[in-house]
Length: 182
Image 1: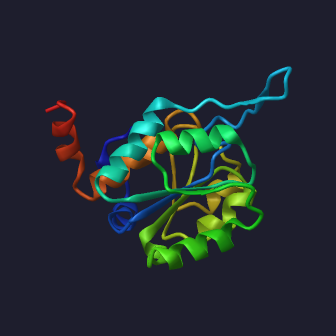
Image 2 (image 1 turned 60 degrees about the vertical axis):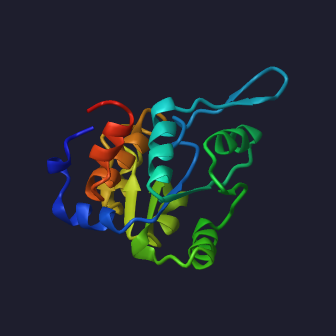
C-alpha cells in the first residue's frame, strides 16, 4: 500500500471518523469470478491479507458488515471465520439495508465506509461518509468514490483500505507492535 502521506488530507479526515466498514463480496472480497464445480457447487477465492485487515479493524472496535446481492454458503463460511456479525445476502436494495444497519448500530453516514466494485453498489456508497471503489471498478463507480484503491478486488484492496483507516486513526503503530513488526 502507498504510504499514508500519499492519502489526501480530506480522505484521511473522512477515515478518522469510520466506525463501520461495509463490504460488497463479489469484486471486492473476491476478484469477481464465480467458479462452479460439475456438481454445481460455488467456489470463491478470498485473499488472506484482506482477512487480516478485517480482523485488525475489528481489534480496534470498527464494525464490519457484508452486504451482497448474491447468496452463497461460501460467503457465510468466510464471514463466520472472520467473525463478521452483520452479513446480508441476497439483497436487492443495498442502500436500504445499510440505512437500517446504521440505525440499529446508532451510526451516521460520516461514520460509515462502503466499498463497491460495480453499479449496484453506488447507492450504498453514496450513503457512506467514505465511499471506496476498488481499482478495477468501472469508471462510473470510480468517479463517484471518494477514494479508489490501488489494488483490484480480491487481491488485497480491502487490506489496503484497512491500513489506510488504521493509519488515519492512529492505530497502525500499535498493531505493528502487537504483531511483532516493531
